[in-house]
Image (tube, rainbow, N blue to C red):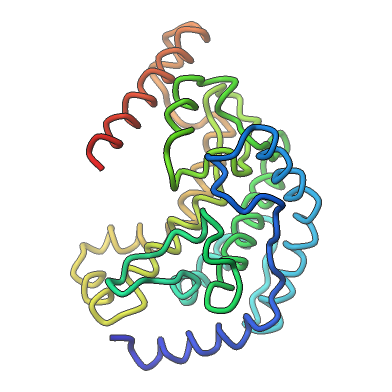
Length: 267
């Protein structure tokens, strides 16, 4: 059951989505399934349209929602607040309220009822570009994992819904670190869909302890701040500080790949 004020938000969003530009990469297949060559072609398309799409997205927010995005923490806070109200409605759910995977698979296409995925993707680009504005060495790449963590990359290459070979950020001093803002906004929208779009979800949210509610509400902002701390070297890491660079990378690769394999078994 959707609450009355949520019906109004959903109607307002659907009205604003009319005519929103389609994100149209050459290979509309989940990127982990693509060859490296085709993943690079999708990435080249991403880089060609990235600035145009973020400009349109920000103009769209100003026109329909009176939200201004600046390239700093203040802008992320504004984007997070907007997402608290609307991001959950960017996703399409099935009969059992499960979120469909079109954001990763491009199927069904991002048109009609699925047009919100274009906005969600542009949210991710915008978030990533704000990270770059605050962390000048960061930059978009097609795959920050394979060259550094080959075992982890091999695991991700067979893992749906993990955004492998979809644009991500690299450039951290920590050699194993990267950021996936396109994936992060998906997780944020999924939380908003779960907790804010229905009466049952709102009741679930209100039953959680206040610190957890704050964490759920500010997930995008929290992720942004974690990237900033990681870029500036403010996150303590006992393994990195006590191992050689080579041993540290090998250790992380082994742990990350094992964790992923365990998750595959559990699923």
